[in-house]
Length: 88
Image (tube, rainbow, N blue to C red; front, side, top):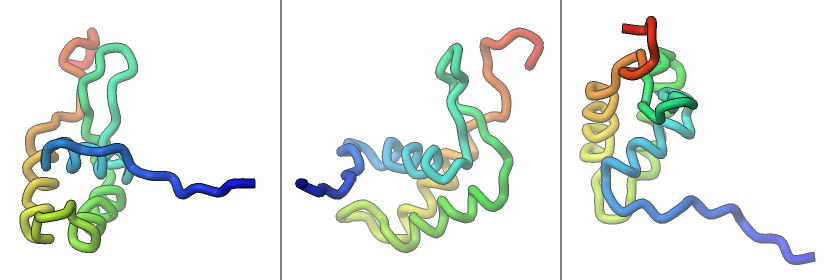
């Protein structure tokens, strides 16, 4: 039986990488109906995402730059979906 390691999908931008890390860590989620990213406000998940940024930044990006990108993406995401009724 052939065993393969699961590979992460190729990410084309640093912002895309940051969103992927935040989703994988559970710090953000996607609205199932509309696709907007939502901040889960979970400090443990956020810290996991920052740890990944420090430990395993994308090729050619310093750990400091990766941490800044994670923070900038988090700053730009609210905790509600902009299109869901009753959440505004």
